[in-house]
Length: 191
Image (tube, rainbow, N blue to C red; front, side, top):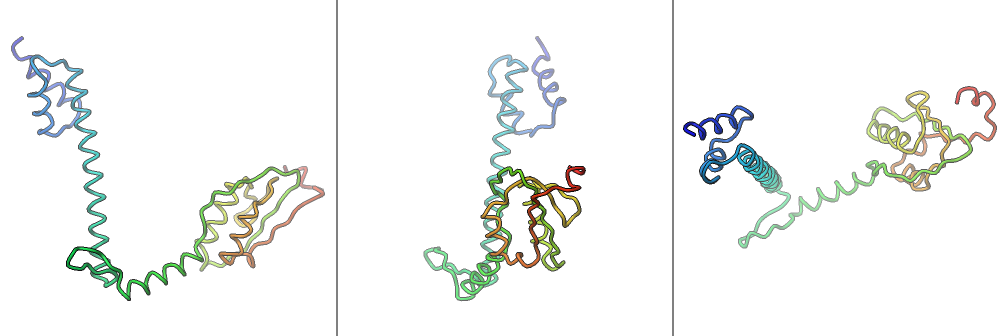
């Protein structure tokens, strides 16, 4: 039917914004009298391919930006065979990063076990350690404790040994108090 090709083209364009190049490619490589569905499927495939290429391009650009900054700051250098080497300044910077990393809060994935006793965790962490304080709150939540106040958490769980070890490692143990309740007293009315 005369105008069928134009009609299908306009239908596809009206449904979604598309790249002109993709439209031309699909229209001229779809054979004689392509169906609307087949054109949509081909355009969807083109759109996905373009998205993957864009992600790859952005990743490559981020890599080149990082490489440029490392070279500019004198942390790495490239020899004549295009091999990268760390500089003395780069080694010092890396050592500082490693020291800093030791005091960073670890990943918050701990395996918690249920208990028949209540645990209360109270803490008073200085503002300069805000990052660690936020980490602690997130860990307590994921372990299964409930917040009574921002710095007071309660629950019926056994605290994992790895969690306690991490409190020592990141130097928070002086700011945290952990209580185990054996007799509930008035708590049984609350929980």
